[in-house]
Image (tube, rainbow, N blue to C red; front, side, top):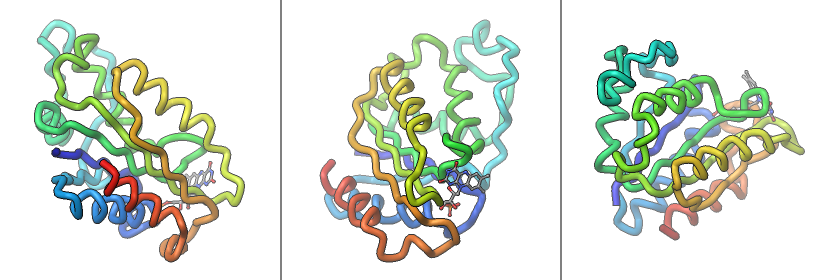
Length: 179
Ligand SMILES: Cc1cc2nc3c(=O)[nH]c(=O)nc-3n(C[C@H](O)[C@H](O)[C@H](O)COP(=O)(O)O)c2cc1C
């Protein structure tokens, strides 16, 4: 299947990128196609709540790099969010993308081939407070009727590279392989 992997750290080659790479290795090893979109490198504006999409069949007024992501809407079967934990939740880069799902409106679930998801998270704290992020993720999945395939959290990783040898890398790879 085609898997749309959204990475969301402004740090190049950071810890969440390493987690995303481990997942990708696992998924590719069993034949899946992984399309990675680095949201932090794209120009994606925040939803303006202008309502234009409601009057224009789900088309957003903003013609920016979000169109790359909308482009995978009808071909990907799975979406994976790879985010650093930022103030207990998704990074702003990923959250901005999620808000832009709004343009596809209430019929979103009928207009996408995506039906499952996974969450990969990196956080600096040794005892991370990730409940708000996990709760947000679960609420999104419930609303969109997407099945949860797994959540991997790499705790106690702050500086770039600290994730090396972290057991979460193996968990992310195994998650990819398990699909
Ligand atoms: C703006 C900001 C907010 C953060 N908030 C949290 C937090 O709430 N909890 C936590 O454990 N770590 C927090 N961190 C640490 C990052 O989650 C951690 O450094 C992570 O490994 C970064 O991933 P990256 O290398 O992919 O950017 C924060 C870091 C930044 C820059």
